[in-house]
Image 1 (spheres, rainbow, N blue to C red):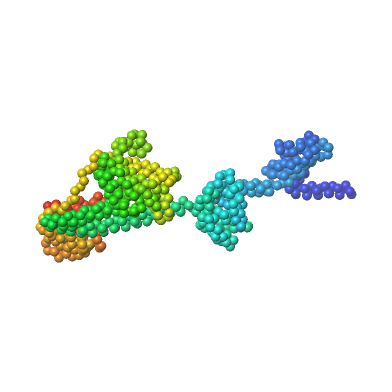
Image 2: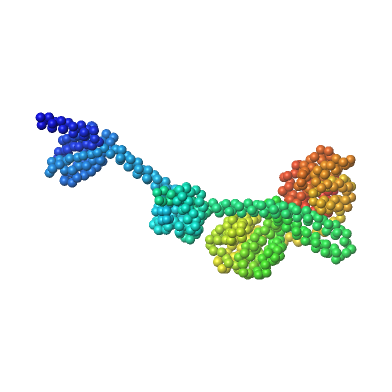
Length: 601
């Protein structure tokens, strides 16, 4: 009876063990399996014979328990062995942990991938407590805040509120996160470890009592956006300058034109003629200013021609006296050997005036401004440093005793939009423009400066030779006579009346209209031929080119003369064909009548 019970119990144990994820075994001192039960495995040897298992079993034979992971039939078993009596063998037990071990490995892999993703992220990532203590940060955050890779501990010693230049910004961010909302695009300013402020854009959320934040340094993006807005303002200013110059040319046409007409009748009145001549010369200088405005607005094509360097410098000095104020003393040292250079005088004015303005701003409390010209032979070695061809050069220098510049400022001096002036006080384009103009003239530029010792700019331009002969005041010539019929169309009444008077005094028969529509009506009522159309290019309603095309359908032999304040070189591309001729404002009576006479003949 007892024997049956024991057999039944042993069978029950074997049945239970076979259903459990466990295996038991014993070995003899030679590590041969003597008993094996539990999981349905191929054999006990599969558990014992792996290198890792053999090391553990030998350790147990020496009297110390050991553990290992057994790889059997695609399963992972957590195994434990210990000595079986005194040198009698080993007893072992193992549990099938395949699912747990795979899950642990997957978790470790996931954590490693997450850590790698965070560490290699281009944006700063950090975790902080609700009070702002930084718990974790990635390498990008170290770089953004100016720390070295080995200084992670220094960063973790700082609290998040200290990074914000304004504490209220941190409080606002914290309140938003604690409300349960996800933050995106929160903008603030942070302090780097070197004290420099940067602009950042923050995103994040609150998770289990912590703030997880993603931070992007947008300082450069903000600066580029500011520069773009400034460039757009400059573009608008250029368009405004072009419009002002165009309208001013209309006024100069009238002023200079009527002055010429008065001069023609003032032969016997010497004093009156002298005064009128001075007025005329002033008008010519004003015309030169409009060309500079048009060049600034890129509506004037620049033309290089021989110009006297000293003459340009004298004109700039005369203009700059009113610009820089009485607290700055201007000293000129002009060499009689400076001679002439090949340049556009308007661009030379712009280049030198930019240097003068830069010097003025460097001397807010007053000082000395020295402008010098000289001749210098530039060697091949020197030319290489100046990035220009060697040879005889005329040099113009602008020197001040202002605040000066350090090495960092000098290194970036000619970069567009680089400025040390306060916001709204400078565009960062002045010296960049100077550099660009010097390069256009195939010249070179140097600057010497130290903090507190002023600045010395020198511009090297290839010298042509002696100064060109100075232009004498151009006096009006007797008007060329004509008898043809001329239709004058101009929306500016003063310019229209002046043009009509000059042509009428020259003997032409005149028809006048204030715009294109009126001109078409007059032409339709006129019974005879119209020999010449003189019309402004830009008018409300019907533009000059369209008016000419429509009138030529009725008067095919009619000549066309378009007038405007813009450069002839720029306008040529806008003319429909070669039968359309152009005259730039302001024009003198002599120039107008000679042009008209030449077209009609």
